[in-house]
Length: 139
Ligand SMILES: [Zn+2]
Ligand SMILES: [Zn+2]
Image (cartoon, rainbow, N blue to C red; front, side):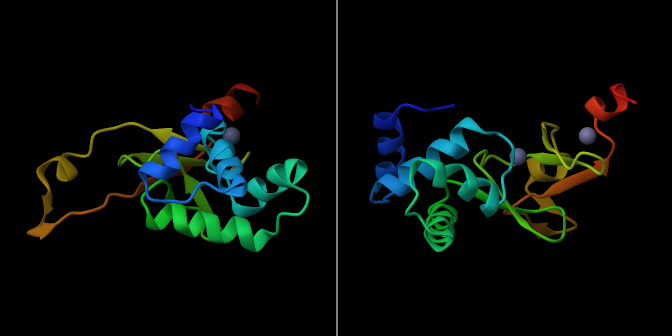
């Protein structure tokens, strides 16, 4: 988790992205919140600091981050795109009750081998749905 502006700037520059203030602020949100946010979640937070920012700016910044490999787009709910700063292959768990998305770190044997049924694997997206442990506890 990086929240230091200098470090954030280095991350953007290393990815070949010009570090504008808007992009730095969006990256800061992604670093500080491991919540697989939607565009709206990011926008609603960042607009507090930058009242002039538009949703299009947030959208464009995220597209650029995806293109440069800084974040992974995640389609899990079926209705909205979420963004994940954790770009190494991992699974997800979506809670049907509270809507929270958890990272699940399990090793996929096929991904490790690199092939499944003769097909070469370049990406892995696996997800589970159910009731999360927090919701199970508060029943
Ligand atoms: Zn839950
Ligand atoms: Zn994740």
